[in-house]
Every structure is written in structure tokens, then in C-alpha cells.
Length: 127
Image 1 (cartoon, helix red, strand yellow):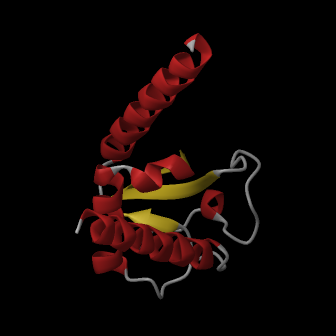
Image 2: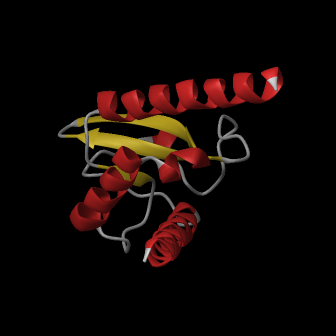
């Protein structure tokens, strides 16, 4: 039973990643009525390093862009936000990956991931 849940979760994450990749390859459009040249998706911005992707936290009229490591795709809160994004925006619109939340929510997830990565690096360097 546990193996089935693990397989189901891996398949779900793979589907999200594939949809994310397709979405990131699309051209630029406005996000929730907010049009900004900084959200140009026709090229990969210089600040998006390998193993990362850009998202835009959209809360009403406020939009803030973040560069997120792929490791966030396993974070439960981030996965919940992706599900909410799919429900609100769908997967068919073009442009940046918009997430319907306050920018502080994304920042909190990034802070948690940074702490986990730091613990992991420290743990392997001490062994």
C-alpha cells in the first residue's frame, strides 16, 4: 500500500513538472491583468540558474517574482499552491507560472527549503 502511494505521488509530481516545463516554454502574456516586461517568458532570465524556475506570486494587484529551486516541487505547501494555481488559472494560459498567494507565502517556503538544504549540506560534510 505504501509503495502504491509513493508511486502515485511520483507520478503526480512528474505530471506537475511536465506541465510546468510546457508552461515555462510559452510566450509572455499578462498575469491576472498585470503586464510587466520583467515577466518575459520568451527567454530564460539570467537570474534563473540551472535547477530553478521563476514563479510570480499574485495577490490581487500585487505581483512579485521569485526564482525557486526545483526542490520546492516536493514541499507540501508549494505543491498545494501549485494545485490552487491549476484550479484558478488552469494550465492553458500563456506566460509566467502564476501562483495565487501572498508573496510572503512563497518567501516562507523558500526560507524553509534553504534551511533544509543547509542542514543536508552540513550533515553530509560532517560524515
